[in-house]
Structure formats: C-alpha cells, structure tokens
Length: 164
Image 1 (cartoon, rainbow, N blue to C red):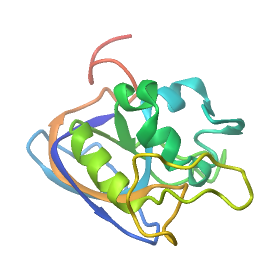
Image 2: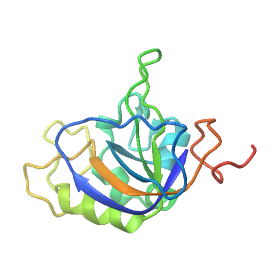
Image 3: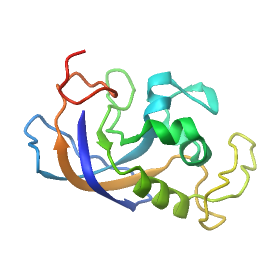
Image 4: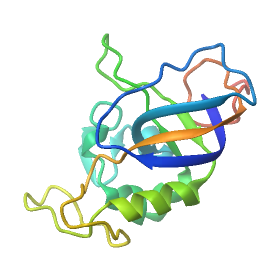
C-alpha cells in the first residue's frame, strides 16, 4: 500500500485506473482514478450501511452518507481503490490518502442530500452538491506525492512497509 501526502481530489464521472507498480519511489508524483473507500468498510469486508454488499466487489454501492457522515468511517482514513482483479472480481487496494479533510470537502461538495428513490441508501446529511449528483459510488482522481511505500502485501492497515 502506498501513502500519499498532500493529495488533491478532482471528481470525475468516469472510471479509469493507473496501475500502481513496484517502481514507485518516495517523492514520486502519482495520479490515480478510482472509487474512494474508507478503511473501516474495507477491513469489515462489507459496507457498514449495506451489510449484504461486499466492500471490494461493489464500491459503486458505497453511499456518500457512509463515507462522509459516519464518524467511524471518517476516522478510519481513506484510499482510492484500483481496478477489479479479473481473477476474483474484487477491486485491488490502491493508494492510501493522508489528507482526510480534502476527501471530505470534495466528496461533500459533490454528493447530494437527496433521498434515494429506491430507498437503498441513506441521504448524506453533510453533502451540498446538486440534487442530480450521486448518492453512492464516490469516484475521484487523486493527484499526490508518494510519502511511504508498502511491503507489497496489499494490506490496508498498519504502517507501510511494516512487518505484520
């Protein structure tokens, strides 16, 4: 798992990813687009507000409410997910984001407070985006500087590079 310092979020409506390689070094500039996920829901294995949904299989079903309103999710930190592994259908861990405030600000400005007409998601009480903006599936492009390198084990918690 790589960690980013001073990340800048730019919201996009399409999904594309950058393959993160072992060639990255501390200080490298990176750009990656993917779903934003909180560490709590990743570690849990299912989404907090949709417990029947496997976190890494369907991040597009992760509500803005869960990501941006719920304290345990906010406090756990965020990362941008990589693409789906064709072998298992799960999204890969991507880059850990050090600046939670920027994730919150960009997400809240983009998400809507509208209720889901299908009642599948809770409304985001801290969002301020237009009514027709999404209520789930926070997708963003992250631009930042690699500040720490992981050990290649694909773990989401702990100090990058630390033995488990």
